[in-house]
Amino acid sequence: MPPSEILPLAQQLIRIPSVTVGEETRLEEVRRAVYFAADYLRSHRLEVRLFDQGDYPALLAGFPGQLLAPVMLNGHLDVVAAEPGIDHFQPRIEGDYLWGRGAADMKTVVATYLVWMKNTRQTGPPYPSINLLLIGNEETGEEQPTGTSHALAALEREHGYAPQLLIAGERTEETGSQLWGQVCVENRGVARFQVIARGQRGHSGSASLQNDLTQRIIRARQKLSQLAARHLTLESADGWHSQIRFPFAHIGTPGVYNIVPDYGVLGVEIRPIPADDVTALVQEFQDFCRAEQLEIDDLLVEPGVVCDPGNPYLRLLLDAVRQASGRPPELGRKLHGTSARFAPGGNGVVWGQSGLGPHARDERHYIPSIEPYYRALDALGAMVKSKE
Image (cartoon, rainbow, N blue to C red; front, side, top):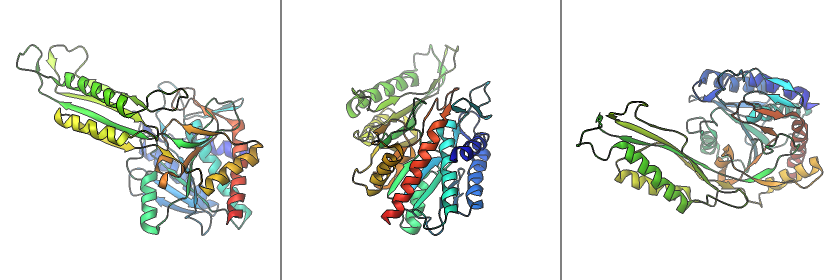
């Protein structure tokens, strides 16, 4: 049975501390995780292309002669840092759960993809036109090479290729108790940046120091909140709305009262639904910052996406889930920003297994959700072959 292969492989991946976010960033371990997956696939006679020009390697794998396939499975091998005092990188199985950093987000699904590709290759031709893209910097936002957007751009530039459906395998059942996750046909985007204020360091009692940077940072936060209220849907009855967060701020030195600081920074993260124009919001805020002599750094703006309901490969995916589950698939919307936002033409969906506690001390994956997902992959492969 596939879970008997997938669980040990998932545990091997979890033991690799491939951290990209947090104080323990370990790029050499990210590289090790991607090369581990590449070696696994190559050892089972799948075609593999490595993207290894930047700090974050990625790989594209496919069946013989079908590296550029219309359906792309997509996942990531990086994780966020462990919490102090917890050995997240020693996986353990307790009852129905696999515990460990990356168990739910998303090394168990990556292991499922690897085993499915291997087993499908061993059945012999004809093979389904499905490939696999694995990256190593999803948690950082994929800004640097090689994220999903960079790999897709290289493939389009070199081969005129774009997947007709990208399936991001992030979990879509988040209670950690059900067998089937939703097929999320809408995905929120991500915008994030730092607002930086620079000023003159001096004595706080000096009458010559006006409009200090603390006031400028506070005004910037107020202005951005006003713009968000105008440009974004921040409340909804069904929970499908945009959000704005200010995850960090640093101005001055705690306990030092008589020195006006010369540097301040405010972190901003926006997760826009596809209907909201986050680009217009950011442009208007940039105009404000220029007038206030504030800088914007580390800017990333990626709107949300909606997959075309008429996409023929989306229909095959829904039929595959229906066949494997024995019931109509549940359509959903993914609140977390995922790699699906990079799908050409917006033709990306999020469809994964069941897990809970991503990025938290209690992260774990619901083991019973593995086997149904694998059966649905089998059904999708058979339907893609029949279509061709």
